[in-house]
Image 1 (cartoon, helix red, strand yellow):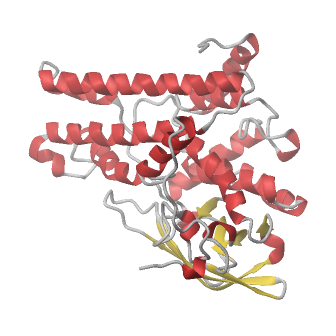
Image 2: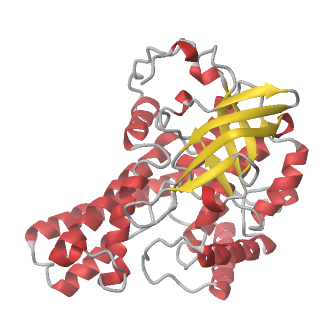
Image 3: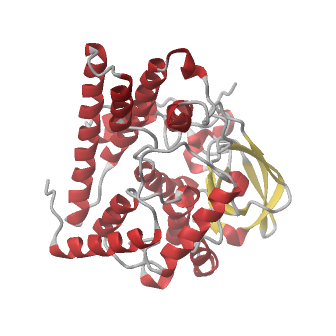
Length: 399
């Protein structure tokens, strides 16, 4: 691995640092997650500022409003932006997963209509894949689309849809043919989240937040012109989205070993041998993940495409976050059960992050799914047995 920037990369890093220091305050540490109207407005304003200065999407072509830069420059931008209090959350799914799918499979009209508005923060997107009976096995989804002239009529339910309650549009994966095996009967559409028949119900999470949603579709009509890819080729389209998702959710927001070490120092427990051993494990895991990211960075710098090893990141960081927060809460004794920001240490950072961590272990692929990806595609181990591989979907057992 090469840890050094080339002269061109160093120049871009300096340009990014100058821009960020002019517009944002440096990050002083992890903060509790917030998702309210003021946070959304701030995120939209920052997105617009980035777009106007060609920092919104580094690798996108200039004709789409991007910078036309390299993948390595995108990595550098991500590294530098992470050092500042940048409100990027509402656009991570849209610009990281949905719009790249629209660009890859949409018509010229789609690109003209949606790309610029999303890039400038005018419209927010969500991803409508998971269902109550189709989480890890997305291809088992049951939301139906039936052709009616030049339109499709959608009925069904999605769940765990991040940001659906403030999204304007979404990419929707549905079943258009139940007579073929489950992976072959899917089709992808663009859906207007504000149109009649779309009902969004926020889910009250254990953390107190409402970031995830249930979404119900009742006789929702979508024009065939808003289809992405061919009818029945939705799984191919979805794989492009999922590949972007794996990379986008690789890390985890929240406290790391540095935060808990600082807190332990305040409490005077650094001399506890059991805690010191845990702290060492967390540090080693953090450094291992850092070096894994450097491997990805080196591949990008050489013009190579990172592979399925990116799945390692989320497995490590999600479990890492949960373990750190659990230990910090235990250190607070009976005060650890209090989840009121104004009454506990660091504004309840450890409590809110502990409640969020289980969701992170599910979002973007469960631990089990990602371990299978690593086993099969990185280590070359045999694939799981799939007894339903060639079975038509309407003949599959359910319930």
